[in-house]
Length: 328
Image (cartoon, rainbow, N blue to C red; front, side):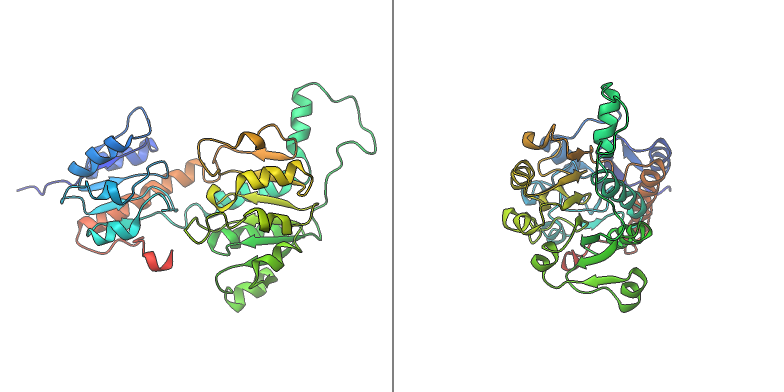
């Protein structure tokens, strides 16, 4: 007698190869038109599915989890971050949560490095001038930006992505500094020629560029608040490819408009998909639509990790990418 296939609900459209494999292995309900699920749609899915495959656009809190059916035993997040899920509440209800770490590292670090290059060198401003037909010829003082070589880069969060950013930045002659919950291993620190700062405040006051690469947790919400932004040098830049909630966007906009900060490059926003209107249109602010991990290869590998987590769970084993709240 054939074994019943696990019923899974996928909340957003995934790469075709991933969806095909899911249909082959599971009783998969796909999101053909890629619309964001409402809370009611999420609740209905959690009442019928054995496995839910959500993304960062799905907010799964304790109240929603309380409406889940007893059959729901796995939430297999399509993404590395899980700040959209109340992981503790899920575990208390006997629901395992997994994610897709590792595969996004290089893609996200590439975009972080792109912003680190683009904003100080004013590349986006130059592109806008060319698009608008405003280039009247070269002059010695035209579009002067800041040199990267020899500058200090402060990385907030020295995990996989932070280390990947550091490796790229060293190639451009940047000096690496970092703030983390604890220092990285001596070997990694030596390879990156990185300086550890226990005090975030002290690091911020000395950096030329700050890259945010830490997860969003209750402890990191508005980690970069008005007081900390004020600590930065007026010629400094800030780049965020992690989570928008880590920066107080209103305070950031005020600082940039007042000339207390030289500029910013943001790929993530505090209230996505909404963007703080005060940041839109500023010439020294480069805004991207949360595309840090958006590569064909990355999305496919994310899907493969989701499938491995579900299949391992279905076979009665512990999924390899199980989320443990204590280490978030």
